[in-house]
Image 1 (cartoon, rainbow, N blue to C red):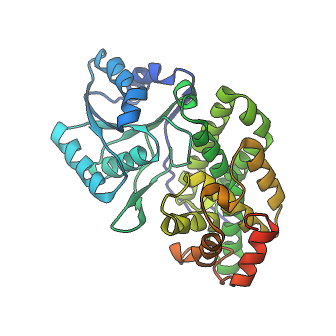
Image 2 (image 1 turned 30 degrees about the horizontal axis):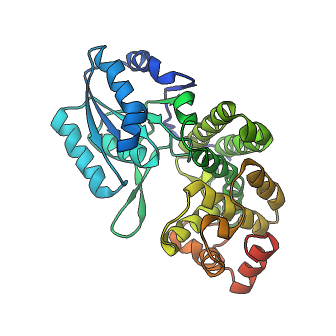
Length: 351
């Protein structure tokens, strides 16, 4: 089928290497960005990388204001929009993990200025995507945004984060395999358009992570480099698709349902990894490959390893589709409790 996306927005520059932030001024110059910048960071990430970035840029006649945030909520996003106007920012620098990047996406998009994504952890694939996930009153919402003009991934900085974040990112990319199966299933049963380019890219990087699992396990720097590039590639597949389809299916719905069911959810990617084992089983695919890869890199493969009890895991599978009923997946036609228990037990997710 002919691709029907007339406009594909993605980063112009991706700089992933040790010491990448030392070249941030060169990146900004190549993008013709100058003047005032607003850095959106957290209390930890401003220490990890933010202060160094400010020092580098202010020595080069950039004026950088800082906004420290906690959660990624709609209200915080609106505060960031107000801050952009207050300091007359020409661009935004997002320094941190998912919350900082999502707020920067939302605020810069609604302020009609570009933003630069500077991840300090490799935990999820929203680094370069064009959607912003923000909490509303009681749940998360996905908002239209834009891709970063550039992504600056300093491997040295990212590798210093607790290893669980990199493992979570690894699991998030691996779960692309079941997201793609859901998209292809929807294409066959509902006629939903699919992008073969996005699917190819999404599967390519998921399989690369699987093939590189020993390096990811044993070599922290090279493993971080591999996972960080994988997350960016996964983000780009979403840019090509114009949605999160190539990287988000039933496994993500189950993860988001768990967010509502348990008091302290595990890292997003880790929950998606566990969920992808059972959704791959439901698709009739090689769920053991996913389970074994996750286990080898140190990611959870059981419900109790992500703080979820038996009943909560069963409920998440049964009602996961309720998170996004409009998105057709392997769960769309319903799954009985008996079938859910069987799938979860056979795969070893629950006893």
